Length: 340
Image (cartoon, rainbow, N blue to C red):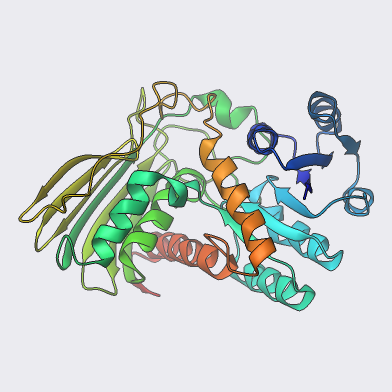
């Protein structure tokens, strides 16, 4: 069976979505719409799709089975609800939206329409990260104690000045944390379980934007583990993300989504590094995008449609990372810890 995808958005991430769809043998791009009509038309021509200037005309295109939303984050829920009302399954680029009440409305709309809702957090598809989740769940690192996550990336001034929405509160919902760091927030929640309290401080250190470009947060997890999260787009020239997780049985270090160090009292014999490092996928270069993770998310989403099971990250799972991000912003604003 061939599935037909519609793409909402015509920016860089939507082009990544289109290339990820194109890499799958049984999926075709049916239609594209975006606020930048000329860019949407260009993408449609490139990928053999029909372009639409307006969302409502786009949503009645036939055939179309699901939409992939890559528009500004503050539009995700509104557009997802519109798609669900037409009986279309909804796959949303992270974050699921920027406001929790709108997320709740989207989850409700998809449930009422009996369509699938998924969120693109491609970390959940990566081999080393999946094996690490299994290791932690099986007690391989013992009781989680300490987490240190560092997202020290760089975005040049034109990354923000060339966009009408990046770094704004209304459409981006924040800065380095909401747009870049939320991947790592989701990863930590996926690996370690829920968070119960956060402390934080945010600053706009380098860029001329409304929201923060640097955040330092402390997260207390339900498991009793405590962790620090540092996220920035002001660390020239940009460094690979590093996550260190220490348990009562030892420490695991992740760099470039690969286990680079595994120092445990007892190491499982079948735990080996499986994710090849891509020299082109540097955090210092946001222009280059690796579509493998996105293709895997789309493939998983289609499987969820076929089987009726939940996708890797459904709406409620996608809501968890947003709740933590919103709590971090609140903690920074008030100077007080915020409970989740």
